[in-house]
Image 1 (cartoon, helix red, strand yellow):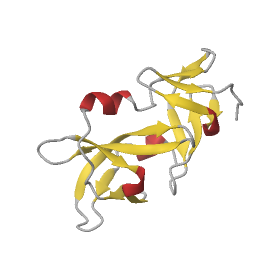
Image 2 (tube, helix red, strand yellow):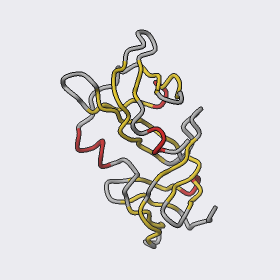
Image 3 (cartoon, helix red, strand yellow):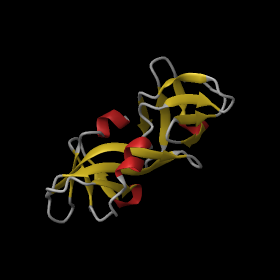
Length: 143
C-alpha cells in the first residue's frame, strides 16, 4: 500500500464503529525500516492532531483504518514536520535524489518497502533516518 492511499482515510473505532479521525500522514523510522505511527486529525470539535502507534492499528480496510483512538495528542509542529512526504531525499553522502512523493509499505506489519520520488524508487531497507528537513538513505540501489 502507498502512503498516499492511506492519507485521507477515516479512522473507525473497533468497539463503536464510530468515525473518530481522518488520517493525515505517517511517521517512519529505520532499524528496521517501518511506519511507527500514523497521524490523524480528530473529527470532534477540537480537531486535534493525534499519533496512533502502529501496534494500535487493528486493520486497514479499503476505506478506513480500524484503530482505538487512545493515543496522546501530538504537538502540531512535530506531527506534520516529520511526515516523510515532501521532504528532500538525500544519500548519507549528501547527494540529493529528489523530493519524497510517496512510499510503499506492507499494510500487515508497517514494513517500509520503497521510498518514491518523481524519478527514483529507493529500497526501504536503505532508510537511515527521517527528520524535519530530509529523509536520508544509504547509497542507492534503484528498484
